[in-house]
View 1 (cartoon, rainbow over the protein chains, first blue to last red):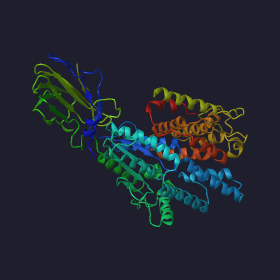
View 2 (cartoon, one colour; view 1 turned 60 degrees about the vertical axis):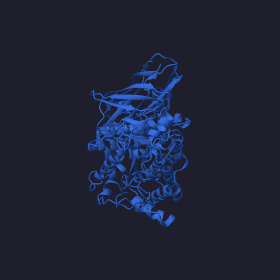
View 3 (cartoon, rainbow over the protein chains, first blue to last red; view 1 turned 90 degrees about the vertical axis):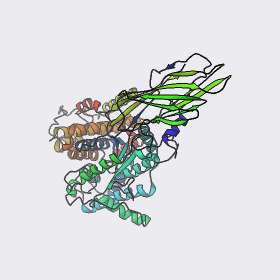
View 4 (cartoon, rainbow over the protein chains, first blue to last red; view 1 turned 30 degrees about the vertical axis):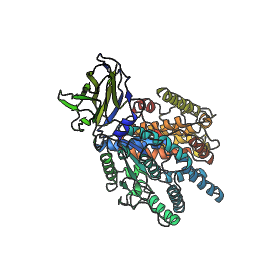
Length: 444
Length: 181
């Protein structure tokens, strides 16, 4: 895997026009940044993915904001708003409802309206007046649907939604944002598919520039029917009837495949909150069930920490500036916002790092890069080429990640000097990192 | 982008209003936030309101009379939970409207549902989270209590063909919460 740095050098290139002159040229700063990126971010973007038993967008939006409030109460920072990823499982949920109703019609039940309302309430974790036999029947239907999602993967509707959602989520990562997916129940199968897309190395349909973003993603699996956690962080209550039943259904179908073992004893009070012990809000974000909510938030904290950001974990740091020189010599000076300077001379044919701060070194303000370039090639035509490159994230594809200066003259050797690049650094409160804006001068 | 979101809101509002029509004159309860004691018309109980997919909304709230009665009976003790229940009722009922059923892509409405749910949660606060979810689920269970209603909801959900991430904008919540009835 090539580093993001090398990819950007290959991807973004501005070549100044060849200048045939003996007079010194002027380097002109662009009016708008050539590119920008968020680096050294600490707060991830949280996405919530609902399960089949809380299927509609209304409650999905509610659950996402309850998660946001729980994160805030725990002091877990996040980038912008917690948002949900649409898991289009409502059709499957309604399928179960319609089959249950058809069954009762066939049995000649008179109170169909009451039955259906109670059945839905039970499926959604509310209290109901259903008979024990009906409850068992519904639990088995839910477990079978969950197991089916594991064995058969996403249906066509979910596959289409996955594409749209993956595009959005990867675009966030590509500008430097860390991402944590929190998935519940059957939504874990959706999360698993989405996470897999983010881990593809190299250029692909969602990541055409091949940015190395895989390590920016983490997943918290809540009540997962999957056999293993995506990034090792999951919690399932021992009393979660749906997952336990799904395990049996899966074992029946596959012989060996089982959901990840339940790993939290939520105590018997779980059923007072939810008759099937499975609801995201009423069970897993319930602060009165033997610390279950705390465990979910602990996993969220761990995921936020484990998700890597650009600048902190990559070897080139947030702003490595590399210079190369051919047919000439150059000297680059980087002036930091505090006035300190770093000067690096380059001999003919050199390729070296001239500046490389770490996240802890980075300061708000402008880093200014000046160059002093002299051609050494023998006449009658004297030429020189120099290149400055910086590691950045960018998704627009229209901006430059490096500056290529190439000029020649005749009949005498020439030199050129001036400011060739500014990098403006400002604190980004929402992500906890810095916004870097690169102004790459053009030679005119 | 802003324009498309505004269009989405406008579409949702239009659909919600369209959903109000039930073809029955007002029962006289009038007040949207303090439903009156059930009238003897039979429209306040599920059995009296199951003849059509959209059912009877005699007070023009944007949801059926029997759903209003459920909110009044079970989810009116905590004002913010009641608001959440009313918003959910409006959103669910809107999905059954003629306009929603005729849409080729229901994604704007699905996104607006998520926005409404998020606003209801923010309005209720963490201390009422369990009660709010319980109320929303109960409203769902009541709203889609016939096969025809379930089928209509399925049709509506299946047409959210361009949905992906469901955005949430807290700055829109004041007007959304204020629109509960």
